Image (cartoon, rainbow, N blue to C red; front, side, top):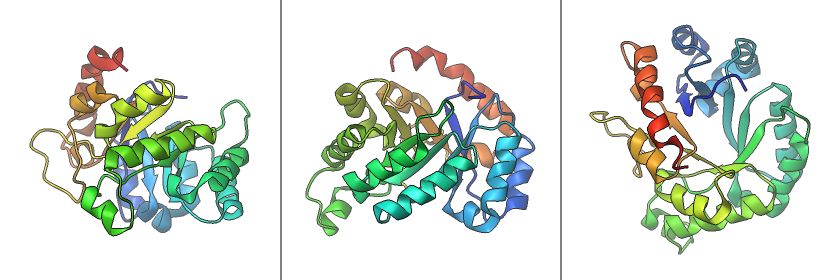
Length: 237
């Protein structure tokens, strides 16, 4: 692991050139990086390998969700890129998550495998529309418990659920939270959001931050302020 930062910068770009222009302005000591579906579809595994070569910890956020063997092979291929973290959808079920966990192995330096619980864009009514009658909190706790039982390292969850998940499953079980916004940031399609300090105090392990950094005039200065502000709440995790 190359950095102690709890910030994961979301490289939500449509092409490698634009993403690289930002990466050139960042430092591995100041943040980790997230590559999602859009950028991966545009730039491919070579781009991810380039980030790893530049000593960034990379969260490959492709949310694998398919039959167990297909997901296992995808996780195996992702692990071979040298990424720090990757994810699957917890709704893929026990067999899928166990297969994914077996695929990443137990070797020293293996990627951390986490599961997506409830998307931060979904509210209770959205869950009801797809046949889930629980609240986002109850559904998040249920899926997080299943992921832990399958041997995964943590979950992607809203900061609103992070504290309850930590209380049930322990501080070592990771809570990676998107939907992090700095004061004054514009609204987005994510509905369950928090500020960085609120999220850490609520129980988040890592914060996925996009526009607040990627659209900043001086992204390193923003990261420096955020990193400096985190030790005050870190011991509460």
